[in-house]
Image 1 (tube, rainbow, N blue to C red):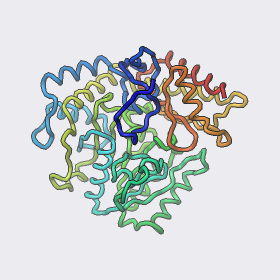
Image 2: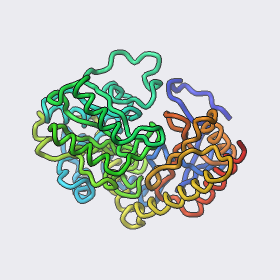
Image 3: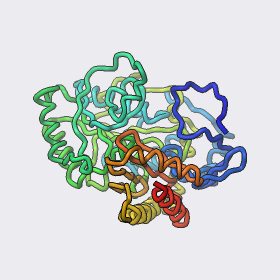
Length: 410
């Protein structure tokens, strides 16, 4: 039943469900109804709802220290996390910044790029989502609705390139040409601090760039002494069947942003880079009261433990293949409105034929009625499927069965 709420109406919800509990890939409402959750907190619950290893770590940390403020002293939990992350982050990344949310981390990455280069302009890609704070909105173009009826003046210094989106007719060549046009029409290379990109486009449609594009982009940045920022808030931490999505494309970014799945649902985000870049910052220009919270860091350490012991990244790759194979079989049926199935690992998008009318919303509603929670994207007529990375083969079969019924009902 719809709930009366005092939450700002600007907070949009996919459903009005009130969830009482969750375990793994399942949630239960206050009236006892079970749903299979393929939203996973919009890609946050990497180890699923209430993984016992994470719960235990959080409980134990809460009895020792709940918050250790990073500007006042070091946290031994954060120090341990940094040590464990050393072999996990991209090669050469030896400097860390922790915050609470993806938007904060993106803001930190943009600030670092500007400090390190002494330049102001940042290039982002059309369809990209980087957050709702003012600095992030200035580089976010996945939906104008994120600005509301009025966002006020946003920070200057943004330029926009085309993201390679083959199903929509945008090739790698088109995207690279748009970068060259920026140099002619929007900003000189000597003014550009960084290019920020989602290695797999997130809220803008779960679009996977063609092989070779990110390497070409990296080479273009290096040619002009421009830094490359990989926004892996949604695509990172095992989501694509690799620890980082950039690994699929053999690219090592100058700056990497991560959040969501890093702490299995506890508020934590991270920026990593090389110390030759971070050493150019002045003390006091970065911070945040709750950044690197001790309990969240404990959850992140437990998440790493679960990843290692349970083969989470390997499971994401296998279940992703199973899911996409099943979806493509549905798409191949005569009369199917599905135009494209794409993704990496358990970051899977389904786009419907442009001749159909608002099919994604209808499919999502039908799935909801059958006990399956899924989300549409903010771009074109598409759906995103982002289960917890612990999802089982049997649960994927349930997803496919429900999804097929929803599509057939059209």
